[in-house]
Image 1 (cartoon, one colour):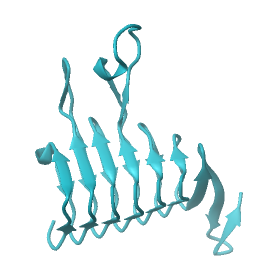
Image 2 (tube, rainbow, N blue to C red):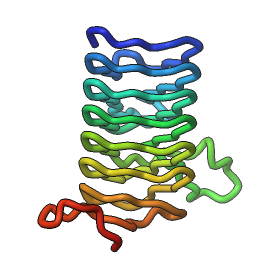
Image 3 (cartoon, helix red, strand yellow):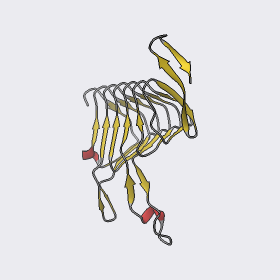
Image 4 (tube, rainbow, N blue to C red):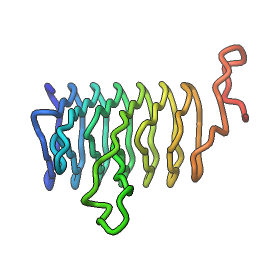
Length: 168
């Protein structure tokens, strides 16, 4: 996108499946992987990063389905986002050689993702969500929430009547 800045070193796999919005900043060590073929599987990857999103060092983003990141988001260092999991159906065959299980990921607008957060396949994170450092997000997170932990759980919600963040 226009006026976006991406710093090296950088690893990009599947560039044609990646879209980066205007005024984005992606710091050093990012790894963006759009996987269109895995073994005998033909996949449909898509990585979309919205306008004015800022990503700190060492993002690792893997998509074999759709990973959509909204506008005006901030990602701290060492965040991992993936839309894939490895099947492990066949005993005696390396997990890494088995089919991929693909589930889309969506992160809304105005989200803050803390340091060392992991976002797993099939997760939808709403708008204006704060994910605390070291959290592992395995389930959907509603808009206007603060969540932390392993697995991440909502600890606060914004109350529009009182105009305050309130403990859950």
